[in-house]
Structures are given as structure tokens and as C-alpha cells.
Amino acid sequence: MALKDLDPLLHSQLRLGVMSLLMSVESAEFTFLKEKTNSTAGNLSVQLDKLSEAGYITIEKTFKGKKPLTTCKITKHGLKAFEEYVNALKQYIGK
Image (cartoon, rainbow, N blue to C red; front, side):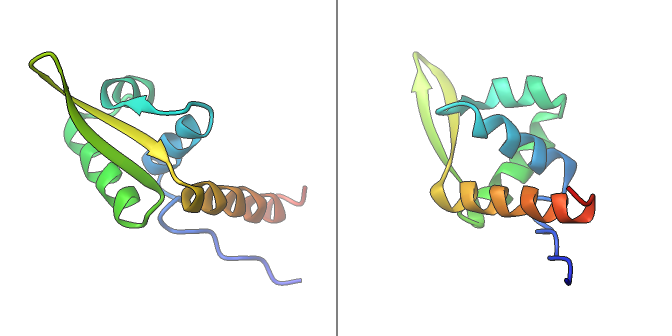
């Protein structure tokens, strides 16, 4: 049986970390994701844009008082892509 290709978009450590975090919450604020992934704001922003462009997450920009608030949610498409990635990874490790 041929092994499935791993989704290159999810193979990035930071993007995979973001997707893993979003799997277990309804939504997450940018600051939460930044803290949990130990990334810089600039790098996280770029990676979130890539996930958003692929339709894996939605990004909502609002304000909390006078402060900007960025909230991310995983989409059904992103959920499916993540599950397929995990299943493909299991094939590689023989589980």
C-alpha cells in the first residue's frame, strides 16, 4: 500500500501546532495561540494567513474595548485536512 503524502501546509511545526490547539477549543485568541506556540507575533500572523487562505481556519478581527482582538476558528475543511494528516502520519509510523 502506498503511503499518502503529508499535507505540506500542515507539516510546518507552527501551523500544525495552531491546528492542534484549535481542534480542542471553539475558538482561540491570537495572544493565546502566540503564548501556547511560543512564536513571534509576526511569524504567527504569517502562518495564520496561510491557514486562512487554504480555508483551514477563519480569522475574525474585532475590538475588545479599544484593543484589536484577533480570533481564530478551525473550519470543517480544516478539521477534515487535520484528520487526514493525522491518519497519513499513522500510516508512516505503522499504527
